[in-house]
Length: 330
Length: 305
Image (cartoon, rainbow over all chains, first blue to last red):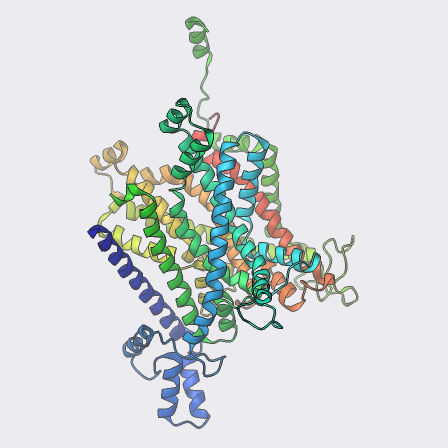
């Protein structure tokens, strides 16, 4: 138990260091930008007739630091306001705090990514077991081929194809926006069903784009386990084949947890494409919009929140792994 | 089978003697073993030729044809035309160079950064290992596509080399980790210990003794990195966060979806589908060919030498 706590504290500590590193990256990136947007904003406010003190305060609210200060102090101010969850003010959404905007966008991304991840994991693992057990039959081979082809298709190609097929060619699903704007949001059936039908295509895109990875890894893992002695022993003892498949699956699924870490990063990264294609109001969409509008405080905040989401998800996965696999707790 | 018979077959076995070009011969044999591999190989050769000679086949400014805007498929325009009446096929062929060159450079940078850092971390262990692995963890955790999008605000992607460099910077993490773990196990092996005993310099050991042993892994990764880089750069252009310097597949996708409204107007559909088709065909080629690469670089899978 003590080891567990030490590990937890250490993981959280290194996660914080990583967040700090990303924060410094975005800070210096905004400073390095051609034309120095912070000073430009400051000068523009002075031109609009503000006094230097007013302009300084305004810039400080927007970016979290003042352009005339020495770089070191600017950095400390920036990090300090960030620790208070204050990412400055958006430029394109005038006068609205960045933290307010990104907190509104975050749930959409989290729901899509989480549903897509769980769906692709379940389907991929099941198909992987089938592909491994029936690997010499045409059914097994076609499963494997479907896995490697889907694994190879990039997310935006998948998204565009699905969007074209199911919203234009056979218009059975709605396109864009998280729900039908003519319906009042609330806890009622029309609203929820509209929410679900709008989420189907993005979620399916997420799921299909990572299903292949799970299938291929699970298949090779199952094939390794099939060669183990305890499987032979259970076969000789005459256990039911369903019991044996249970044993195999439980042992084969363990190596997949390391893949989770990579998959989470991939999914959050993919939100940039998928939310853009389906015009879904999540973090990835916000990031691209912020860059298009040259809204640097919003860009930094969104990027930081995406990174924090990935880091937190990684820490959770790490601990789930040690719960599921007793061997690594020792 | 009796013992004498077995002895006869053992005697009859003649090992192939190592000849200068046996690697290429083995590679050729691995490719021609299955039809699927040959198809994959041909697709890759076709795209490579497209990238090399494609831009010379057309004038520098592609001809526009105002009478044939969004023309349907025809003999004159095999893939239809775009919003100016330029042939989509010409756009795909001339656009291949930037896409494939940047991807090849990106994969090269990925492999170089990953291999060198992985070798150093795995061989010298100690503090250099912990420093390199912390940096690797950072690059593995930060989602690389949003990072690319953010970097696009300060980096000029006009030249394929610049694009390749940034693609390499953001994607070497997995490679470094895998090379490190292989180096860690190799450094304990007898032949490395012997080399160390002979007083050979660490760099000789790293690049002449250990590197050839991880080369199979590197070869496989080079090809998979190329596909990763193609998707990342086409994706960047598709999102439109990078200024359009040159015509390429990503620019076509962006214009088709966000300007031409190809999703809702069937006329512009060939304009959207041509770059998608090119990407899917290339993906198919690489997936089919990877199977052969696996066999070429992994001697255990090879049936003959």
